Length: 530
Image (cartoon, rainbow, N blue to C red; front, side, top):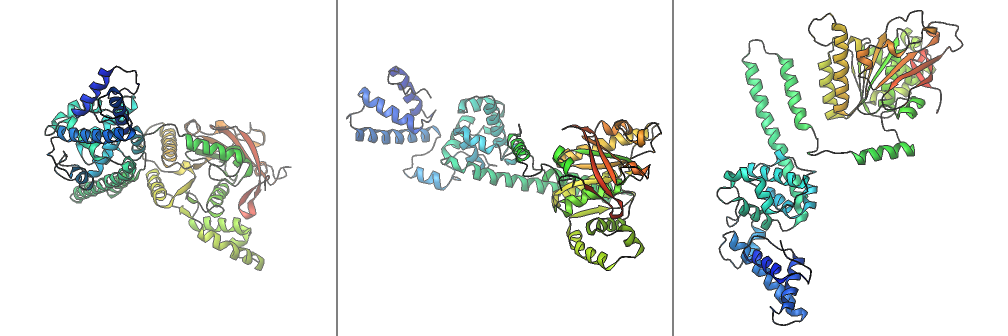
């Protein structure tokens, strides 16, 4: 504001600062007032040289500053003004916009006085959270100045708001900003009021959403052939857009990244969802949030068994919510396989009704954990990609969905126009939508794909990354190829073993992980770290 704290500063500079105070254009902080009082005392402008005299003069200067500010705002003289200002911010003595709230005004007043308050508020409030148009414009102006490193003075903010002059025509921009500063006495309340304003903003958005849904339903009601599925999809998208909890400003996610690195370094926990296979979890830290994993394998390799293993380790072993989409098995068969794997009861014993007493005992012990597992299953062969997207969003919003497993991606329906390249286009569209969903919901999506019978050029019919369609491989973060030699050669020395060939890993190394296949129990098990 022009006040110089250096004793050697020319006297004219401090006289100019006093003039600004008396004109009410700028308000000094306590430190500047103390310095000014002492400077005036040393200059002989104040009678007496004692500390008590300086303190008395400081009090007089504070009162002078207050009176000048009130006069600048056009306020009538009132000996009780300070008390009324603190206790009744709604008084018509203070310049206010007709559509504003005291909390919004208080927040902006704090931001005008402190960059720390601005930094705290910006983590909580979005522009649309403000009910007042004038306050939204002030908030945007403050953010712009702050981002460019410009001082948050009344003059600078006023320049940013020059195009909004008609909104403040009754009181003037400078007067309005000054009134905001005068009302904000405790900067610590900025965050408290910001949370309140943010909540009110969410309520307004929900109210507007209700009206929008009503309008859409009324339009559909008069349609001769209303498309209910399309209406439901639109409504769900609108609801999830309101529920989205993205912060108003973004940047490097340093805290989350350092937390992940620390967790990996300590070995205390996985970053992703555990696969149940020690070597893979060590290599990739489980299935990471936001990843699309493609698992390919020829017929009879045990792809459905492996898919259920991923589900079991997520939801039964870790009690994390999962969604299993099976386009090949019924819900009863899925349940039977999971019970066989968990209880270690031979699947053919369960199917043939030849279970022993020991089998029944093991099954009884396993049933509670299977029944309580947060697994959601879909066995509709006509299930479409759009159906899947809606189900995942609902489960993510209300149940905390952690993993999606699809068996298998080549059977998932998607509506696309007829095209000679239709099969390839479908794969590309499905893969891109699944990866987009994985990123948006921050969860791993594991999709299985059936490779056709491999040609004789392969040694032991071993699959390679080129056996996965390019439209899938290019989009996937991880590609795993499932292979068992004994599926082709019954007398193979590797009977009972299976390879998880990690042919692509966007975020880590590739490798071949050997696991054990226990087909009679419908499960794969890790061969190391257990």
